[in-house]
Length: 312
Ligand code: SF4
Ligand code: SF4
Image (tube, rainbow, N blue to C red; front, side, top):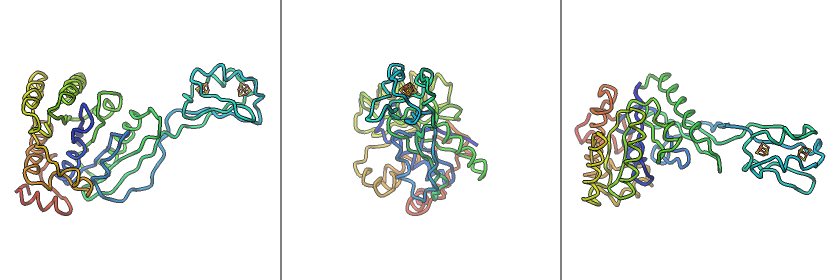
């Protein structure tokens, strides 16, 4: 089983729409939406979600008003300002509570107990190209790395169960903990960037992180024709980091409209060929081409167009 992560240093580079196209070209894979703070790969992969399951991380204090003597000791002990006075005593704010346990330690009435913190929800979806594993992180929750790890575990389990050779991971933008969780142990990383000042800056940062992990990687330059000097700088950054440029995709103003109809750039002449070239390069540079077989098993127009392009 091979695992390929698609990441970007910054948001808005077209990472998710490229992942949606790669899923179609892979034909049969398990896809993971690891951008749990702003998950939207499901918008591109039609299908029926299974039951949503809770994701629990950490704990939250609960104060029993029947035991509480309203002495106020826990208000002083809580460094997070999570305990507040209410009409009949005190209560813990689950958004502010960090589950540290200081309140329980100072409470002489044993009025504080803890419940698991429901940090999000996750599910699986059957799509025409295989299973999608995706999730939504709760408001003000900071366990995105753990949730990404859970989604990846589930994806590997499903791939092994179903005899699927490929896991494609739509990673989060940036260089933080969730990105680490998304790329740890993968076989290759595709970095999607754009020829803008912010895109180039964040490309260099994410390449440094990937280099730290010692992972094979390659760059896809999206919206390549928007800024020729910027595209040249991207090539220079790739060269400095000794990371191959897998391909370039032209800017296409019609793409947002297609995404709204659960379609991808594979629907657009010129863009389709560029994405196909990138996918071939992924197979050659990052993967084992026997695993990344270019035989789309897509339903609908994408499949027909891929066949027309001579790939199957
Ligand atoms: S567990 Fe910690 S953060 Fe939560 S209410 Fe108690 S003292 Fe405050
Ligand atoms: S320390 Fe215990 S008894 Fe005192 S206010 Fe807090 S919960 Fe109530």
